[in-house]
Length: 88
Image 1 (cartoon, rainbow, N blue to C red):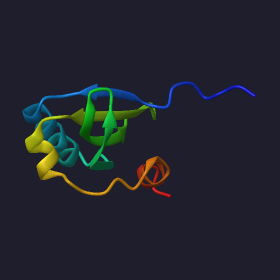
Image 2: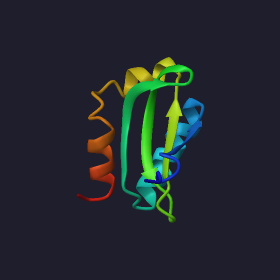
Image 3: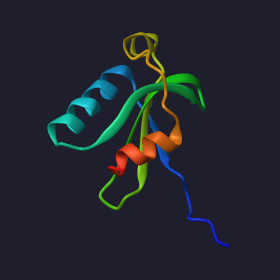
Image 4: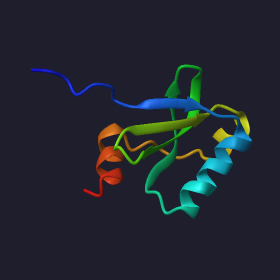
C-alpha cells in the first residue's frame, strides 16, 4: 500500500513574524490549531497548524522564550489537531 506523501511542511518564524501570521490567519478566517507547545527540530517551540488551499498541512513554529511563555498550553495531539482542522 502506498503512503500519502508528506505529513506536513514546517516553517520556523521569529516571534514578531509568528504573531503577524496568527493575526493574518484570524483576519482571513483561516481555521487553525494552536499555538501549542511541542518539540521540533530546534527543541521546544510554539506551533500553529493550518491547511493551505491545496489541503497541504502547514506548521508555523516559533522558539523564542516569550512566545513559549505566552502560549503555554497543552498540545491535544496530532490526531485531535487534524480532526479539528478538517471540521470533524
